[in-house]
Amino acid sequence: MTLLKALQVGVILDNLSGYVTHLHDGKPIQLSFKFSADTRFHIASVSRKINEYRDTYEKARVEIIKQHGGPWEKEVVSKDKENAERDIKDLLDKDVEDVGLILPKKEILSDDNPIPPATIESLLDYIK
Image (cartoon, rainbow, N blue to C red):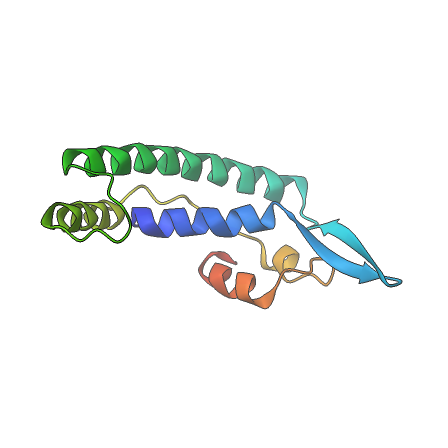
């Protein structure tokens, strides 16, 4: 698993940790997703590992930018900025330990869980 993939999985899991808003009798209500205690614990454990990756990545990204003379204004184009962007991409392409995410199909696809189809699609590799 690449660092980029791990960070993307983190964003997806963040979405599962929140609420979804539905209309009930014409009024918006917030519903949380319904998972077993084991699944919630697994999601929390994987999220913790990904948060460690995220923190390390952010520190490394800032250092790469500094090493190349940044930060720069968004519209600035320079060889140093291009080199920093290349190094950051190389960092994101590095392999990291797989986060071991496995989500139970029965819970993810339950009618009690109004998980949007796009979120389910992004989790297909992890639903068993």
